[in-house]
Image (cartoon, rainbow, N blue to C red; front, side):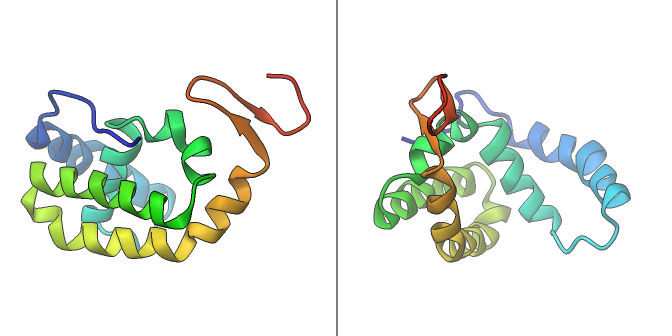
Length: 123
């Protein structure tokens, strides 16, 4: 279900995060404990994959399914940027820890791959 977009240039992704996104993020949230590597991984997940399009239907699935899919996506990311391998492992652990909350929130949304709406409302 989770897939990276085609033709990603890992060097450009890292460069963009290092030069624009990450410093700006620290200006907005100076006490943030997010590392550069975590920020790069989040950029891959949210800007270079289909995660944001499918997240509500994704998190409604079983914990095992979600963690397998997230693991596969993180392996793809670490294949593109080997420097992220260790942090990808940590990211998977964070998703494992937060699955219950994600799953609970997904139950409040009706979705398919293209539309979403609050339960009880028309899309």
